[in-house]
Length: 269
Image (cartoon, rainbow, N blue to C red; front, side, top):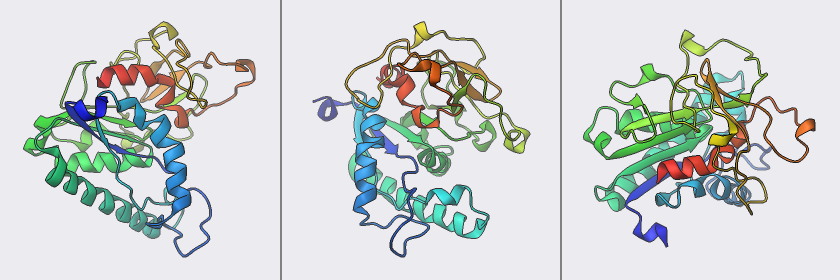
């Protein structure tokens, strides 16, 4: 059991899965006892994303009252921000509890996706950027949400596959995707190529892809796609899967982890 003997810990924050219309009073944040959401998280993010780290560390996944998907798109900015604050407050309490009761000075990997990354970015600011805890940070995997280098004083993007005390980030799109709006703050987001672990724009062919894990979760598919960093996003050509000719996806957000599963797994180890 690699979990019991792991030398590091992983604090993983799942993405926005509270996307359905609630039937109770919880419109902006998930209820603590939302069994439907817990089932959805277990069968998706925990299965397909968090498992990428189970050979590298003991995984801790806090249940948090995540903000509803509408929080990222609603014109009601006040309610949206309140919902995100509630979600982060849960995560912050959980992380403090983890530090107080479980960490014992062990190395830490922070990982998230989408809304999970939104909160992980803040966690890094509050707990790591200007404190000695930074010395325990192996790396932060901040996939599926914009990350700007200017938001940290001490933490830097990882320079290569063996850098520590740093972070990586990417958002996956098709080679033909055209962004709908310019980069926020006129600052190009940090983007790491998970096939090379570099932040440059060098092209990495599908030969660099050590394997994806898709919906059936029953095999590793090597060489599924290439990857290249372009103006703050990660571009790929159509994945080598059955029905490729009919695949017209522009945004591979849901597959930020799955397409590069074995590369991330090996890197974390």
